[in-house]
Image (cartoon, rainbow, N blue to C red):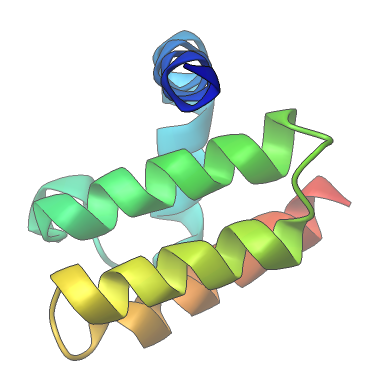
Length: 95
């Protein structure tokens, strides 16, 4: 049951802070618009960005690592490096 509650917390958090999260993603994606990104990458970036910015219980390094691993499994060959770079910059911004 707890995982469903956390999934709901993430969903609500990304919805509530979506404009700020998307602005940071675009800022650090260096020339990539949200529309150009694969859907999986965009979802992973939003989820991990919310964890980095708004969930003090998840260390930024853990959020980044989990997003990178999911990208390696479910997205393109280049996605994991892209996601790692964007989220690394967002984590630096959040400090």
